[in-house]
Amino acid sequence: MKLYLGSHLSWYVPGQVSQMEIRLAESVSLMKLLAQLGLPSTEIAIAAVNGGLVRLADTQVTDGDRVEFHPPVGGG
Image (tube, rainbow, N blue to C red; front, side, top):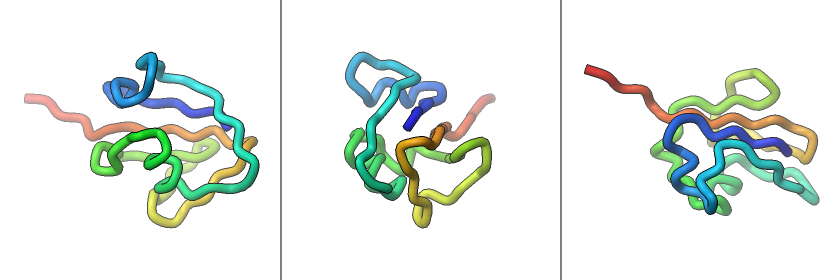
C-alpha cells in the first residue's frame, strides 16, 4: 500500500516522511491503520483511496491501494 500524508501529518511518523510504502498481509480499516501509525484521526479532514474520497470509519484498504490523508486547512 502506498501512503501519502499531506501538510503537517508527516510530523507524526518516524523520519517525518510524507510518502511511504507499507506492506499489508490482509485488509485493514483506515482507523486501525491510523492507530498503528500514531496519527490522530482528529487531524484527518480528507481521506482518499485510489483517488476517491472515503470515510475513515467504514473503509478497508489492501496492499495494492494508494491512500491519502489530508488535515484541515486554515487561514486568516
